[in-house]
Image (tube, rainbow, N blue to C red; front, side, top):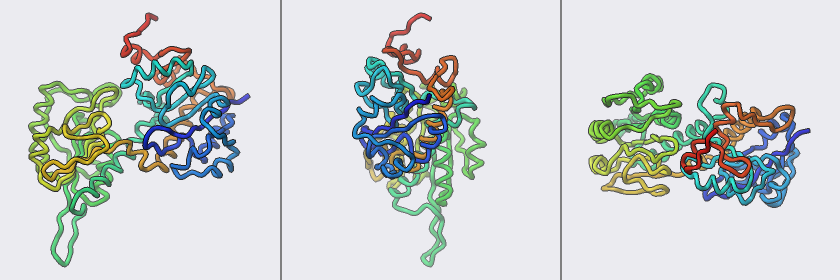
Length: 379
């Protein structure tokens, strides 16, 4: 009875998170699992080896040893498939819709692969939604980066030298990251506006004490699964013309718009940047997807006529301790859904399992990834 869960040290550049924290080990134990870990797996996130040993986690010297002994491997960023074999089930972030060829290479290992970013946004899966958890952290941290880069303070202050007006912050995109950015900017005392192509989120923006920036776009910006959809060229032009006027008034702009599996839409053109006031700041959360600002460079801070464009990558990793805690709980809920009688037994008829299963039996089995590879097979 039971199964073995393995935790490995993350190898992706700049990744400090760990897939399972010591406290969450207890949740796996209740499922009937034995947990093992690579030495030092949690150090970068602030979790010592002794913390795991206190939870009866056996520590091994290498990821290869963990992979040989564990049926289930939990990761933040899925490494290359050569580490695994057909006896492994691997769960983590792997960006399958953007990197289908990498998924095909992974499949050759024979290991079963689940992509947590593909968890469907349904009520039953809310506790497993890793994207929302990490987006919440990204929205929070983006505002702090903007406040640090801005050569002025966020809150209004009454001082002996006179009144300092509050900074003006505009958040583009009102998904989880955007709403958290709005809330954080408000807590810091800024005057905040929010914008999204989905008019339905107007009430959510206003409920956080921000104003909704009204930009008229013909048609709906609402896409499948509650995400924003790709706009047409005509819709984008209309949006940009109205956006340019709004940007001139802002001190900090946080952009969060992303479409799963696609390049991020350009919301701020270089012409708009040139129209902004020197000293203002753009923090582009979508930098890793190409950026919402035309001049964004991932991992860099670009200065354009005094306007700073910050292109952060992997913001969740910069808050590794709490990001790991949230991610680990999401994983525990995801795995619990696949455990029957203390055994790992994923049911392909389950919507959550079906939507997240990328590879199995030496093949890519996810239909969307198959389509990207051009290998769709008839059912």
